[in-house]
Image (cartoon, rainbow, N blue to C red):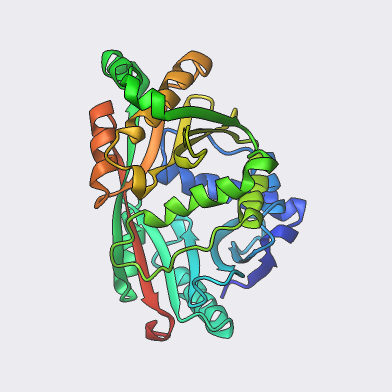
Length: 340
């Protein structure tokens, strides 16, 4: 039986990090076959800068020689007031080592840790490029809670005329609202408004997932920011502000990493409920794409995730020419229902 190595990911040593990075690049090649391997330094800086509010515990199984990792289990527990019932997990097994009980063994360890932390619900996700993941979740009796797409836009196929129409907003819109840009960290003097703005993220569809609203704080946003920038990501945030009140009404964010220069990750886009129906979302998306075209000429692909139930955002992305790249299923299972 393979001995399991346990570690807190922030404390990973350089030698283990190198082996784990090599293993994860094999896993990612299955999930995203067109993407380049992730460099060790990027991965290591991310692990060393995991948010303080997050406990990330990892169990590793190695081959008989001890040189290579063949399976990994990770549990993530947020030490925040919201979602005290929840633990997120990930299990990865080398393609050549599957159906040998490694995944089930790691799951038992993760479930034990979740119970020790009084977390009654485990949650994870799988994607269509790795069918073994969904099959494993079905075998253990997990329930799908949300279906989503990762959609991809090839900028060479972008309808530039449509983009220009979306940028040419009516005069009454520009009289009432203005676009702004944060290039990099959020300005400290604007953090109270940024915190309020990010509460929009709680409006994202959750379908059947048992997730509470996340309590957004400046501390949480800064810790996410530190993790993102430590990995070398460069972030742009466009926002819309109401001129008369100074209120932030909506925003869109992207992340770009020079280690993957042709790919741009389109993160959350949202508009406050008080300002929906004014076409601010498509103004934000158009402004961001216009900036990418002008200032990131190396980018050829834009990727974003959308819940299948998020009709307004899907309509915007479909109009821009985003096409399906892969599907993702978010699963949940009661800790005590796992057959141990």
